[in-house]
Length: 228
Image 1: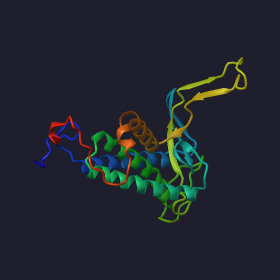
Image 2: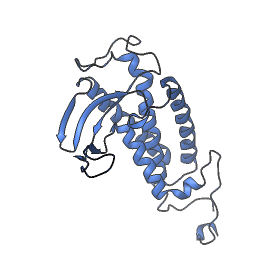
Image 3: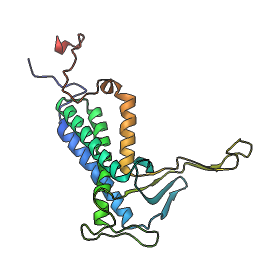
Image 4: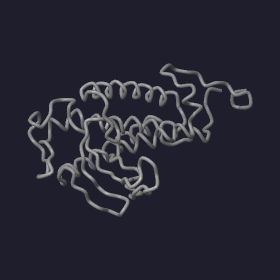
């Protein structure tokens, strides 16, 4: 018989395709709503204290996740688009091959997170005026913003200085210097990418070990009565 009985990995209900679409679109919307709210209501470098270990701290960067920068902005934007295209194609193949739901969710988080930051680079320079410590940014007519296509800055805002202290004076090299544990400022898209990657590495090493853009047949399990 060709009909497959539902298993824990493939329960009846929401299809892989719809699950992928819903998660991807939801992450993109949440990410952009947060960024636009911050950009149009806070001055650049303004910080709002939520707790001692959590701040909304508005910054912008030209680089990769968590503000990392080591290559030209235009080259980085083009690389991002190529990378998202490759990830998107692989993502589509996995939904077609009925990969495990958890694997689909992780891929959707990574894809949507990367796409969210690309959206900033592609369009924010075209639709916003430049952010400043002295005034709040606002929308401008399309194409009259602060930067050309692919040259917009990525908006970051989440800051978690979980430990804010000083190194003991007796420590060599760093004694007496200020120390903050987890100082990067990041956004919702960065968080989705990081969580997706970590969960993949922890729970989906089998899938990662057979990583391929080509269609693959599910290996036959001699102990599976459904394949006997």
